Image (cartoon, rainbow, N blue to C red):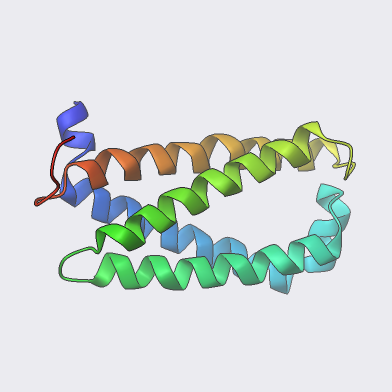
Length: 135
């Protein structure tokens, strides 16, 4: 099972999934800023900033996923970005900088778990790409 999950085809599908969710969430953060701020209890400025960041991230992920040979260095950038996003979501969830609603807490928790899982799948896949020297 681990061999399958770390295959190059699963890696490419994971990056496409990551890109598509980035586009959808980025657009939602920008187009529904005031509604999401109210529902989630998160500042509108945070949602707008993360909306832009998600669209930039998604553009990078699309470039990587559509490349004939996925560039390892850019894949590592995605992995680090996902880990940073998961950590930032956890800090928002557990910290006192914002007071998210119950729905907002669930939203942040979903981000922590799902984005960390995406980073893990991407990490497993990038390690199995052809041409990687073993340590």
